Image (cartoon, rainbow, N blue to C red; front, side, top):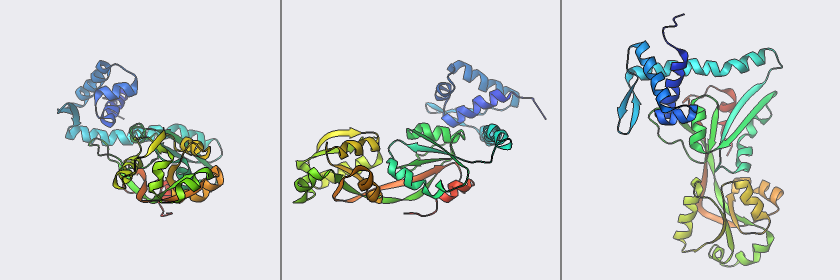
Length: 294
């Protein structure tokens, strides 16, 4: 086997390509920008071709860089799998599924989306919650098998990502029984007369809710905004205010939070996506997740 280049240099180039620039790669690697840049230049010298070229305020891959990235993907994907392969060889067999969960996605929805794989014998489910951009970075580095999100993956010239539609659910308004009488008459305009709890603006559904209020000339009295959907529902169940939720998990909402459905949020829909690095999904459990269930 040829060792004319250093695999560490290849790894640094790989992270630069995935992160879309040397500065972001240096942050990911916790290294100095100059060090990462020097490692990539060493790789270019050993291969005899430029792998990156300036484009605007950033960098893009040359044709040689695209070819190098394809090979690096294969090399480091195998490297990522090595520890689990060795561990599985000496222990009881497990089926591993590493899932990234966008922090804007309701937890009850996540639980339902994962139901198709929950009965898998010897399942080892790893769930990581975070911001979409961070999760997509881990997906590109093959630390995750799939990312569940409330929006499709953004365009990225350096990473091929595929957004698989997992369905959608209409939104409805829920609250503790104390708000039933206050909202019953003249709904949904009556929502202007009660305190509201809403998801923060980083969620995809918040823009649709704001537009819904505007179209109906409702001036919402927002008393709380929550990045975490489970926390929003907990405060809603305590009576702090009325809140929106995916009607798809209606039964779970009523059972777990003892709230009531106050009325529909007509025209507002929440969408769910599974984001992966393959157009034709290979992972058998991810394939199972993508079967229509909505």
